Length: 250
Image 1 (cartoon, rainbow, N blue to C red):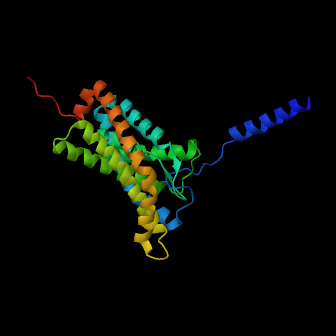
Image 2: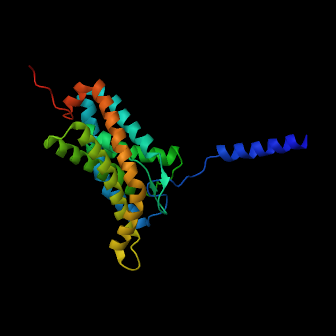
Image 3: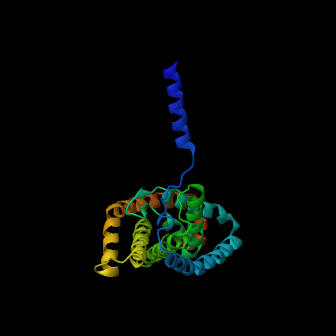
């Protein structure tokens, strides 16, 4: 009987521990890590891009309401991938970003909004924290990453590279440049006592490289698979958005 009660107590405390929500502090740059002046600076710097993105999404959905579903798909893709976090350095985490796919299809402005929503949902719904560092995280993951991915995809298209290669390079390098930006943000806030900003940035980039290089390659391959699936079922829409070239009529 005593053994049964003891087992019930153990199960009760285990269930309580597993079901009580706790802050995970797993955000791209974690909650409260940046000094207030830097948190405010990155928020103000991100704001114009997000406002521009709202106009872009309004224009896209007004011209073609059928694209709302695809907007939801690329937002969900970024949400799921960027939620797969692993510890990297104190105050941050490593993870795929998932923003390259949306940037290729809808452009970097639209992804500044979708990426901001993704980060906000993770902070509030997944208890990842990061409200005070939201501006810095938006700038690196929802602004710099998508701009890089979009530019690389367009460059590949201009040079005549295969679509799959352009998609892979855009998403993988966009991921890496997100973390180069994060290293810059952390180095600006926490310069090394000896060597200053450059030494600190080199240190952060070296630590991120261990986990982020394989993650970026994996994200690139996965993005190619999802892009190919979307192309198979939404070819006309992607041609209208100038993501794919229209085939010449015979």
